Image 1 (tube, rainbow, N blue to C red):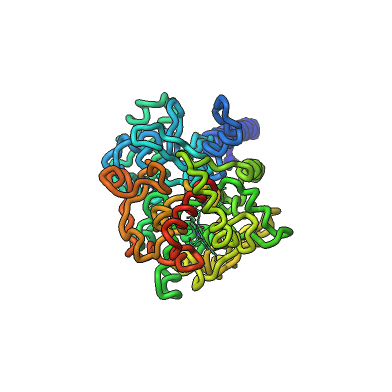
Image 2 (cartoon, protein in one colour):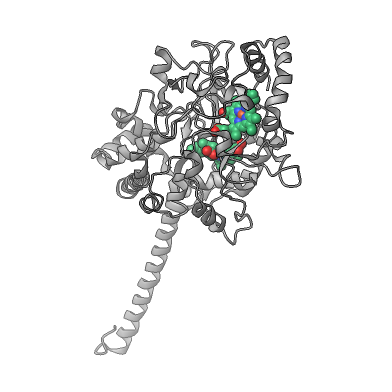
Length: 508
Ligand code: HEC
Ligand code: HEC
């Protein structure tokens, strides 16, 4: 490298300079590397807001990270401006409120969205996106937010589609987004360059890729508000199953559209776990019998990885959910009528639905229960096998995924707020569920959160329900309202007895 023709003294001097230059370069690279690390990858522990009168674990449930920001996190400033820049792509007005997340006055983020700094602030969804219910007892009344309740207004598929439609738009570039971002945020000159050259293009690519990953949803019925296909997204992403190949092998496209489930009182479910009378099956089709695995796989399904899974926080959250009570029915109950209903319930329903029922938490075979079979067929032996080896080597590796062939007989605590009913949310009220399927509503609207005064379900028809809700058509594949009918299910009881059982069920 150093020309031999130079006199030795010059060669030594040049050598020293070269070494110094090299050392300077190494230091510069280290500083830059550190800068890049700090700006892009350094994880800062989350600092959650202090909410007066709210347990910290409840705040964690609302806004805490479940480990999804590492892979799926959207830079917070970009996330903030998307509904402004792409207001035309929102399914309805209201910014992110359009996707059903409750947003408490004065809060930085809606419930169900967490913000964590990994290099830069990133946002992602958490359990509360789907596991928080809301209701009103009158149209002008305040909206009651129920943590752990089934997310009756959540619109996960619309949310995913909104984000990828933004990314597909030519306006998703630094020239459009940076001025919008700077309206809300003070960016340093370095940050500006970072957003222009790195974060905006990378976010665009990431959202486009996410859109691609959901391409399979386009040919299948919409999830609709308050529902999600819970495991097809996991099969086609985390478990590496190719949806086109699956379609070829099975000869049909799987549809898993399911109603959100509540997470309250989980200790009562665990009471029946191994060691108890019967293994308790979680999820509508009973695909796992271990609550911890269900919690962890919930986080994995939402984007956490084996490395980013916050095991301790999730354990604490599970302990809190285990004791979380459902809210009481919000209207007066006719106690005398309810007392008349209890023995009928005990005779016909308790065996499958009371916490100590011999069949509660077990899977009732599809032919016996007779409800829409699509959700059962969405979960496959193949998926079960892959998920059971997915986290091999981790102390919490999954082993309890199973493939069953029916629907779990769920406990009915907090039943009034579980409406609409059945795994696909196909029956708007308990009055309707107590009728033979031919007499249940064929088309109704779900997603309007005003409760029927003194009834058992949300208002499901009329202009308000149509404006705020989604049209539910029971003729759509996966949406059938048949099953759970006949003498064992009380659909042929005399009207007076039905009324009594329904009154009793308001107290569960
Ligand atoms: C995008 C929506 C969504 C998110 C986010 C989500 N879940 Fe769920 N969860 C559901 C749906 C829908 C079901 C019922 C699905 C089925 O089995 O068909 C469910 C079922 C469950 C169940 C089973 C309940 C029972 O009684 O069997 C548990 C427990 C659970 N989720 C916990 C979690 C936890 C913990 C998180 C966060 C780490 C989470 N979920 C995140 C939608 C979601
Ligand atoms: C043989 C067991 C069995 C009996 C008996 C039974 N059920 Fe069920 N029930 C189930 C199963 C399984 C499901 C879930 C089916 C589905 O969603 O496809 C269910 C679902 C329900 C739901 C919907 C829960 C929700 O969160 O949407 C209600 C309400 C209900 N049953 C009420 C009753 C009543 C009332 C009786 C008695 C008159 C009764 N059941 C008798 C097994 C049973």
